[in-house]
View: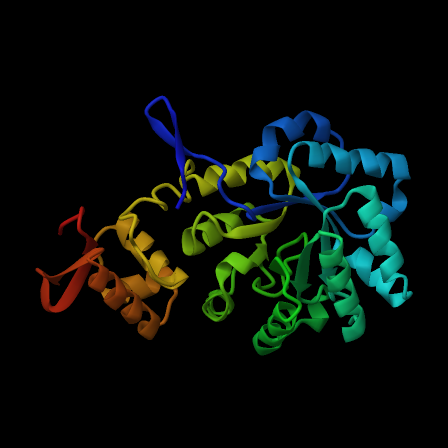
Amino acid sequence: MSLFRMYGDLPVVEKTRTDCTMMIDRILPGLEEMLPVISPYISVAKIGWGIPLLLEDSFLKARVRSYRNYGVHVSNGGTLLEIASSRRKHLDLLQKLADTGFDTIELSEGVVDIPGLQKREIADFARSHGLRFHVEVGRKSPSNQLSLDETIDRINGAMDLDPDLVIIEGRETGRNVEIYDQEGKIKWDWVTRITEEYDISRLMFEAPLEDQQAQLIVRLGESVSLGNVSMHSVIPLESQRQGLRGDTFGAHLGPENVQGSPATRFVYHVIATGGPMDQSRIMRVTGLNRRTVQLSLDSLLGQGALRQVPDPHDMRRRLYSCEAQGH
């Protein structure tokens, strides 16, 4: 549950989330100016790809120290560790990262597969050195994508390493990879399957595009962990989380005791913001199948979060509304 501070008479969400926004650092200018403003809304900054190999040690250490001074965790990009692994230099790289001040290690297999023994060595190094540990799942090449079942298998394997977070690949384009189709639209059947299988608090979805971020917040809640966020999208994203923009306005309103799956909370949000509607319309708006909608409605009715009344224009149908809406 979000805590609030007051801005005049307006409630504003305090930062109480532990793993919510991962910012991708491309080593662009302006960080020193922006960091005091955006740091409260970043959980981790990822210095992406193999960029650390291109930087002078003194510059990299200063960059990492800037984040750490503001309480922001710092992670490598998974590609860097893939490069080191392919050369059997992964332990050397890990020590270098730790010495430089990185406090989060990301393991991925976006380009190459990493042998199981190396994965365990990487996980053990992170734990023995008091570092946070993230595992990213998904392939980077659009021509070599995993199926949904393969993704589930990879998440299972990642969970076996006991990471702090499992990150679902989204690249920097948010298109034609994992939960996104070639136009960048979210494949909700994938999201539903993944969130039904795993505790969402242990998942992060890379979501580089702002409309993707808004949709995932509406569907999964303001505390959903999102990654590959650009420096200039951090504040706009936080405004979405707090319901301070039209896309997510009202997304957090409603009974504090509404419980259930992400689909159930999404159905509640759609009815709370869209007004009374029948089951067919709920299915069209949400894109959920009939069974999922019915289970969600049954749960919400059982909690007393919704009321069900006959449609005055067709007594065979039922309209669902929030208690505050009436009919």
